[in-house]
Amino acid sequence: MTDFIRIEENPAHGEIHGYGVACLATRSTPVPPEELRSFAASLMTAVASGCVAKGAKDIGHIKAYVEHATGFLAADTLGDPADLTVEGKDGEPATTFRLVINSVIYGLSREAVARVTEDALKQVFQEHGLSMEPENHSRSNKTER
Image (cartoon, rainbow, N blue to C red; front, side, top):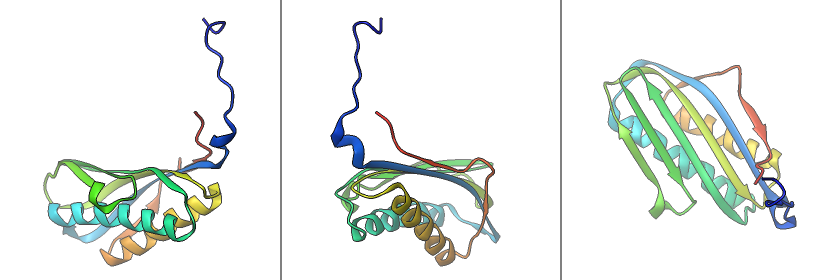
């Protein structure tokens, strides 16, 4: 079958880089569903605006998954605030949740995408009074097509 499909690296893809990270978020007072949705939306906006401010040519996607014992949210954006979505099952207020975020950005180095994403995480965590604990399998890599 590989005789029929030939995938060659496109030089235009050289400036596309991704970054993904997973962590646990905690707070002594439970985070109500509406605040969790606000957190997810703020995170999408902070990463997108940070990437644009650093010179990104395009936002391929920025996605986040928020998971806790009784709920699951998916947030995503292509950089335009009008296109930001947060969907899923709210569940009960949570004192701990798992966050996974993945960004694919055109026009920034992998290091710049990682730095912007991590700075946005710190900022939004602080705004919501959350503490962060990294997961063991956080990673960063170049997105391949």
